[in-house]
Amino acid sequence: MAAEILDGKAIAAEVRAAVARDVEAFAEQFGGARPGLATILVGDDPASAVYVNGKQKACADVGMQGFNFPLAADAPRAEVVALIERLNADPEVSGILCQLPVPAHLDGVELTGLIDATKDVDGLTAVSAGLLALGREGLRPCTPSGVMHLLDVAGAELSGAEAVVIGRSNLFGKPMAQLLLGADATVTTCHSRTRDLAAVCRRADVLVAAVGRAEMVKADWVKPGATVIDVGMNRVDGKLVGDVEFAAVKEVARAITPVPGGVGPMTIAFLLRNTLQAARMQRAATVPA
Ligand code: NAP
Image (cartoon, rainbow, N blue to C red; front, side, top):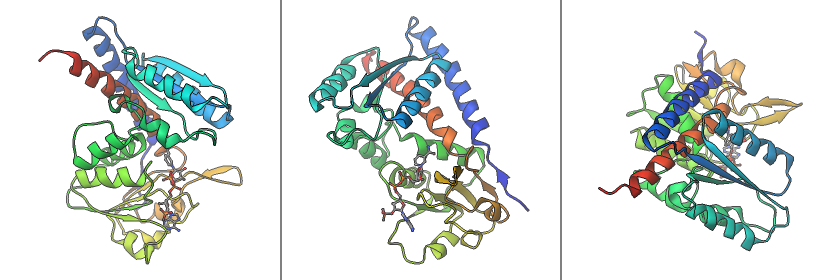
């Protein structure tokens, strides 16, 4: 039987609608105050500008404040650092995002690390990564959070399940594995040195591919009845293609995400949710017990 196709666009729209409702409740509770997302865009990379504009528009759509700070491509490190410090101290700003990549004279990891952990809506600072590893409350990276939501909607049983994540990036693979572990899955993280990747993948009840290699995961890598999440985004002949050979794998899997329209739309939805969560955490920290 062909797999259920998980409609990320529709599921993300539901998440955004829920955030919009929660933003109104937040404003009502806190005298009209609204969560606010500050984006920092250094340079004029057109793709980054499109991403930042998309995030700002998404903020406006759910009734949040948006503050965009475009800086010149040759902005000195001190200028970016001063801006991050100012935004860290600004109570109107709930979340801060430094769009990556930054120009070569800057260090994106270092700059991201300067963002206050309570405003780290990308969930990429060492503090956020540490809180995730410890299973403590904190802001989680947006795309892995979106995948957890898709798995929930798909009804995937995670407790005790074999979960395999292909990819070990700080941005996705590592936090994804941590979130699955936190949900009591038995997690294997694969990478370019993994021996017999196909055999490891065949063990998976939940298979998450985040490699960046078009259609690498074949149907005979997938256990019948598995839930398959395709995070990959590859351009092939002008078309967006995932890391999973969708047409063949959907005949084996129980549920699967398409590319495009699967994981992709979840990222901004969870950025909005993180911004709201950050605003709530900041309010909780300032309200006397
Ligand atoms: P990345 O930093 O390039 O990491 C890729 C990972 O894949 C690495 O851990 C690498 O292993 C592993 N890998 C490479 N070749 C492999 C092979 N032949 N067999 C097994 N593992 C292999 O990429 P990323 O940032 O995690 O992103 C991965 C993909 O997800 C990309 O296509 C990206 O565009 C997409 N993505 C999409 C979203 C979204 O939809 N919003 C968000 C994030 C990422 P090593 O560590 O050994 O090099």
